[in-house]
Image (cartoon, rainbow, N blue to C red):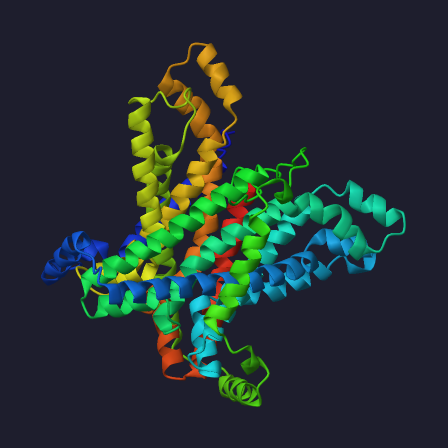
Length: 546
């Protein structure tokens, strides 16, 4: 009898990834040539040269400051509703909540999760375009477009945090006759609060980027002004606005780091690759400077005042009539050429695979340069001052990459690349490697130093410590982050499709602009199905990596 061949799961998934990348390059037309538009290089040069001469006129600076405040206010208001939705939805979609109610509710959490999966699968830009048709160009559109999909995403993460939290205290209260709601408030929520708060602040960082993107559809703010200036080739103004966006994103990033330091939380986002770390200390936000809660409250009040969203439109008869008319126009879904939908779906999938492969590789490489390492880990080359300088410059590069919205990156690359999925893939890759690089750098910074010290004590060289100590401890987490961002990236293909990068996103935006609601529903069903497939694959591989 022949020897049975056993294929390693790592080899299998690696082979699947390699085949997927080659297939994606073929779909993108990389092997066919004629990708570069030589006539666009002059525009790129003019754009780059303008960085040294931004528009600093008092009139435009006031406009920039107003746009920056509007973007911040949109993000604050959207995040507020997002956290409220996430907290309620997170409890209702957590397995532990339904277990606390009794055996008759064991499968109810699956139903709630399935309901929340639908708004989560639709990008906030599509929500924004949908609400524009109901409420017009009102600030309410941006707030709702952030709150609804982000609320569903937050509910999913909150439910996972609650399910990973120790339950002994909860069931002790339940066995004592305490109602489930009170038992949750006094046992599970306090334990999970640091992780819930940390993720809420991470979601606020994401809301800043989404508020910028939503500006492109007319909501105002920095994204709207960047889009207008870029379309009119006023590159000096574009750089002024980009610098303002960097300032806003940088301040948010710094404040997020400060808050996590006060809460003694190492990471912005924990994907439950390992069990969530439990905190034995009683540290809470009240032991940090007492400016946080009053400052957050003042910022929230200011934001609602500044955006001046007309929430009365939510219950106006006219809005209900428009919604009813849209629902009436949507059904039945229109029959669309299946060949076209299949072709656009392959474009969308290929775009996301190329984007996340490039972003993942670049993020892994730059994360080691961006991480603030311990002295023992930092002897890979260069002096301490040189390492600090490299770390600072790399962090700025990552901030710049993630602060600029994907559609803006896509517009820049459309100067020199012909329309297609390649400009969209590059735009998504640059934006996501900025996010991944920062998340991966935190993984490196929070490594357990004891195994590395043991290797050094045994006489291992720096390269051996890196290969046998650092890489095995970080690569599984890196892959988990890449897969998580792939789930986000497949939804983000919509926003680069808005500027002509192809895929289902372009068809969706065209149908919304043409009020083709029946065709829109059909395309949306296909798009949601594609995102679910990606979610299932990503979740399966991440579960394997645990």
